[in-house]
Length: 138
Image 1 (cartoon, rainbow, N blue to C red):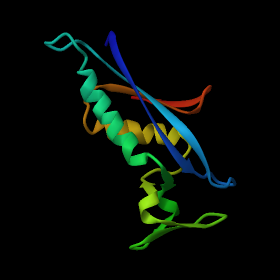
Image 2: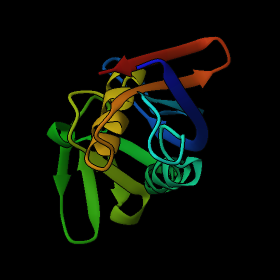
Image 3: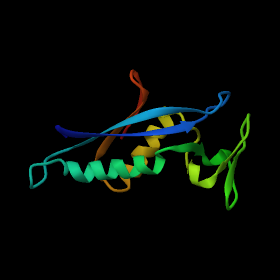
Image 4: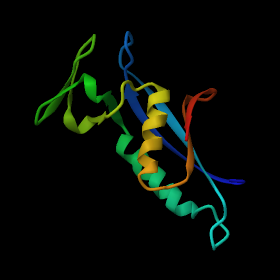
């Protein structure tokens, strides 16, 4: 797999980690897709990859990111079962099937979402701020 194409995306969101209160980041995502060239001499179309990345970023944009294990859902709100506890309107939250909302787990989550559409080796790098990033590649 000698070739790689990359696109970037971003989204602001809030999260909390064990022992920390809620806080936010302007997350940036860089996705690389690896492979040989197709009949059009591309790994894949940049716009297809960018659309997939933007769709995931849009779902996380301006949301509180919550691991599903910490969430107690009702029709109108979500209660975070953490210390300290929080209650948010359901529209402000993205409940994710992750163990934690660390950069590492979020990178893997985005990777798994992309793998649903793209059958190639993918690398996802997620930055919380410049110089602080985590990546998941498979």
